[in-house]
Length: 247
Image (cartoon, rainbow, N blue to C red; front, side):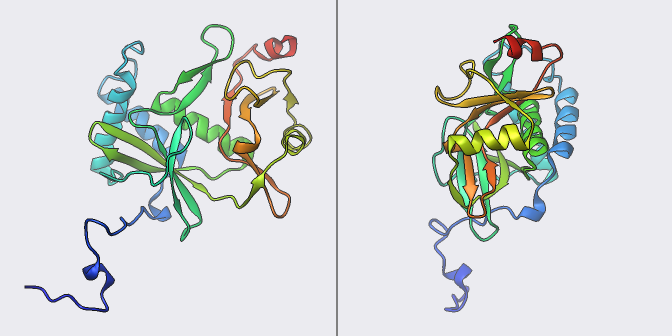
């Protein structure tokens, strides 16, 4: 028998109920680096250019990334979110590090906006497209999103990323518009083309469009800094700026 010492909280903790230690921020990887890895992994097993009409296509890609995560030490088997979120993510707050872990829904990689049919449409994202969306979020808003790993249970894998916790209040519509137009050089669109929530705003400039801007996704800190945390940015394809200028 191994004695249980009263001053040893790890020995005293019931393994069935003790909170699981969360991944440390120093273990995270830049989105650019993991995107390069994803390209290599998916090309190696032949799923990068598979049949995108196959309903299993996204799941197979996530499983491929999971296998690589296992080899590289980024598989957090059984790690699940603490709280249900919105349509794209569930979350776990990590107050000790001032960050939040964002888990995609099981076997999904959130959403992107594409122009495959000529007009912007919401679509389920492939993992590499999801990484591209997050990198664009970092570029436009100086965010610090980074890749944590793959979590969830077998058959219900989730992509985990990390974002800094923002302390503040929901931004007003006026604050959102001022930040996007005056600070970042976007123009507000007359309507959101059905992307995101019905009341959300959308903004365009020569290199990007940002959808689903609304108070629930944008916060104002006590210092008056407006910070988007969960919008949908998309790189503007060539020739599409005219479409938004006309619409």
